[in-house]
Image 1 (tube, rainbow, N blue to C red):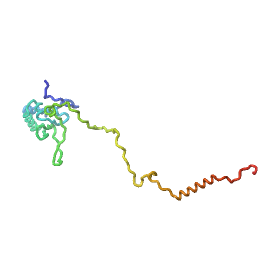
Image 2 (cartoon, helix red, strand yellow):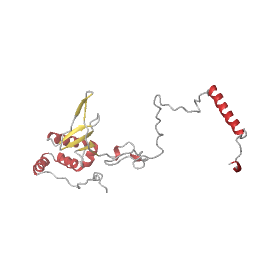
Image 3 (cartoon, helix red, strand yellow):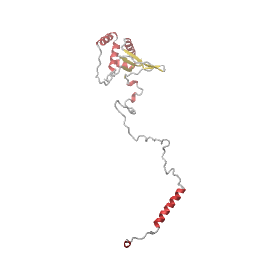
Image 4 (tube, rainbow, N blue to C red):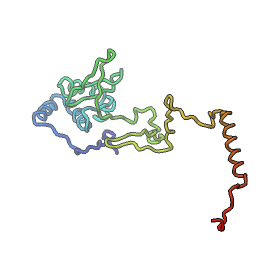
Length: 218
């Protein structure tokens, strides 16, 4: 029979173990005598923090992991908060889903438009039976892929691209195209050119009046 309270271990480059210093370990042992459920819950939370300092889970999920009812989880959380072992931050307005912060206080930013907010990373634990589409889990269509650049990567252009930019002409430097703006010829210049061509043609057509070369007259 499969144990439904066992969660898959999150991938971690630092290994699959956690450690505490001697003073914390002794204080943890004393808490185990005073509040065994709180000690057990802290073990579960610490085992799930991974690379983060927080775990997000509903009280129902924690109850399943602990093998107890939700009221026991509520009392265990109160003991951990009073002993300053964890900090609880509510997600939503119902109070049944919270972020359990370990080792560090949440950093709050603001004010911004009369609101204070906090950003932090956390491991999120979900239960299959709490999902509205639990009958379709594992059968959904894949999500659309959004482009993403990692550190050191650059985007390479691909495709047809955009047309080249069109630079207009500067004022006073527009080209004067003959096909668009051809000046009218000067009539006086046309008459003078016609007379010159006619005179050259008459000289070429006139007979040569110079005496022929004769070697006996030398």
